[in-house]
Amino acid sequence: MLNSTIISPSLLAADFSKLDRELERMEKAGADCLHLDVMDGVFVPNISFGVPIISSIRPATKMPFDLHLMITNPLQYIEVFAKTGCDMITFHLESQSDPAVVIDAIHTFGKKAGLSIRPGTPAEDLLPFLDKLELVLIMSVEPGFGGQKFMESCLSKIRTIRNHAPNLRISVDGGINAETGKRCREAGADMLVAGSYVFGAENPAQAISSLRK
Ligand code: DX5
Ligand code: ZN
Image (cartoon, rainbow, N blue to C red):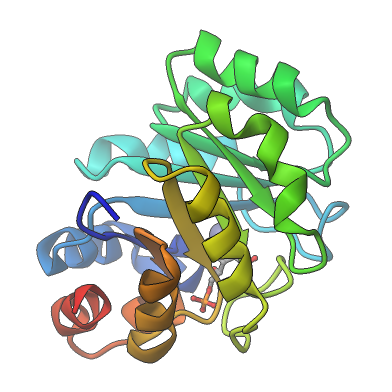
């Protein structure tokens, strides 16, 4: 682990009736970026939010945007999402796409490219793409909903990726709290996505610093 751990709170757990206040709360609490879960109701059994919401909150905060596309056809949407002002765009290996082509499209728009795997996908499936990526996102829950229980199986996947890519950013998403986050960092992760643990905290600054300890 070369860099300090990046903490990326997931907006999915925010109070959507007070988004500007929620963004300010995260920025003040020391979040490094904001994780944005886009769901199409096909790739995952849930629908969240898309381009209009992301574009409208972009001017409201300085935090970089860490986009997590849980959608069936990412290639079709890279350009519109890139234009919202996202900094990192992560899509799923299990989506219906040629990963190398999607990664190139993300880079064409000057964004960092991330590739994610669901709990049932082996880490080895990511290996052919590691050289082209800035980020790998290991799901520690089945994608689709916040507030689920952390799945231990992500730990050995983090170790596998870290062994192959000593300098790659490795993020983990789902069921992250101080305890599970520590185990992910020990396995080699250097970025943690946390929704309910951070947004649901009375003191989000304390929650964020507990994820770094
Ligand atoms: C799940 C999303 C996660 C989710 C995490 O599909 O990708 O980012 O919001 O929520 P918690 O931290 O509550 O498990
Ligand atoms: Zn996510």
